[in-house]
Length: 288
Image (tube, rainbow, N blue to C red; front, side, top):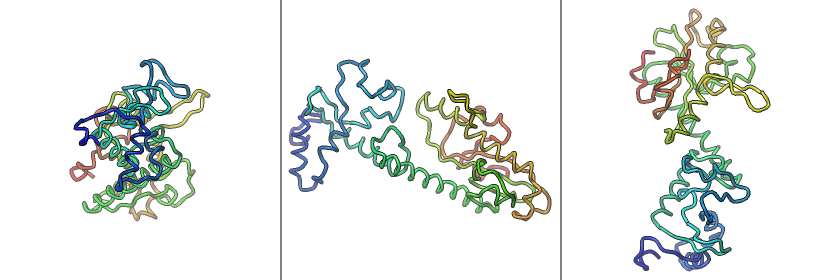
């Protein structure tokens, strides 16, 4: 359509766009109206006007992957009509669709980015699968370095004793070459932080502290949960000899392995016991 008009972007009524797409044999005809509505960024009279049921965060330019953004809704409504006049830029539409589809497939876009529960559930499941694949990658790289490793193990399995399930599981366990140390590894395929807000959020998750909600309930952050697992195993190191075949209780150390630069690589994590952060690509140079 853009080529026929000889324009890089053009305005068109949304139902007219739907009919034009339906007329094409190479374009699926089912659900076109719903798809175009999903891709439409609603018109607002002014920037501070927040539609009912939405929040300022939905439009905040400092927040990437917000539900109301050009990358999420590349068809720009130019009026408030039920059948709005939309501005179509094919290049933007193509980039936005690819970004969303890749994010859905890899599970890197979650929560409010999606409208349907089905999309949120699928993205969450994909993110879980990608996380397990990363854990397997870490384990395989360590095996190639000659270390004995296990992935996704419960503390009860390693210690051969009953353990409170609230401790969670260990992503990767690795035994040092000299059989004297056990590495308890938190392996996370965390995406690169792109804004100050994302950096602050990531640091909040990996400070090794307790979060307190409005009702005063306390929960450990992700780093503190990891540290508590390491400390529990260290306190029961003698129980590791049976399952992991140590001749004597090993030295237990914690490590965080990530696949993209994180703020923890440069600040705070190295100041925490068992909170050292290591890039996956640098794993071969690490002194195990």
